[in-house]
Length: 294
Ligand SMILES: Nc1nc2c(c(=O)[nH]1)N[C@@H](CN(C=O)c1ccc(C(=O)N[C@@H](CCC(=O)O)C(=O)O)cc1)CN2
Image 1: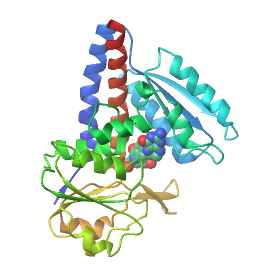
Image 2 (image 1 turned 90 degrees about the vertical axis):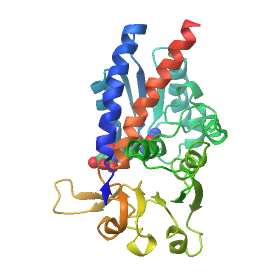
Image 3 (image 1 turned 90 degrees about the horizontal axis):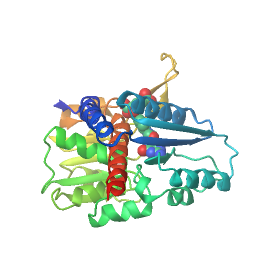
């Protein structure tokens, strides 16, 4: 059984991006710059936003931080995004999710300029992915593809079963896997799927993205399958300094012995999310620079 280390793949991505960022600065005289907007005080969001800043600094990218109070109005948030859309020194914009109650995530996402939508959440980016046009792809599913590529796990002709139909992971994951060149046969399962284990047991590649700790158990996988665990669940653990530990949607100890390959949690898909965000920011800066040159 092979452990698919997101940490190792992310490091490879960062090494490549470091060189690309140096070259970009030499070519254009400025650095790719990301604006990160956080609304409210959610501790997990604060830690993800801190991770994004750290990644920008380590790559030599520019970084602009906007931390707004939880009672920020929709109008105030949209005003800030509008300013960032107009700011030519900003190449990528992201608003950390989830937003506090009272703010409409769909309206917020739609207000981000498609050229700066490094999260790949904008409906136009999602549409581009669906029809196979170039555009930004949501970071977590893109990270899964990067892991599969790095470990030379072929998808063509394989049955990929995705458990979870979120707009951020499940649906874009299906679009990526079914694309020409990837050529997987894809099944998406969800809370209303009947006899889920009978379907997950057909998977050559099983992707768990439900957000329920230890949901996938050994009776749900066939021998020799590849398991990709997208879940990052905090469960209470008084023995840990921070009072919790992270577990995936897969019961790793039960399932791993039956797999050909599996991603761990932590250190698997999660760490790819920020690496892919940096890759998208590099791409956004490049597109901006190429437009300027024309
Ligand atoms: N605007 C966005 N909001 C959210 C996204 C997103 O892609 N864009 N994804 C998630 C959170 N997320 C990034 O924002 C994220 C999740 C997980 C990790 C990560 O590095 N996980 C590590 C563990 C980190 C820890 O110790 O807590 C791992 O899995 O090993 C980074 C970023 C929701 N919101």
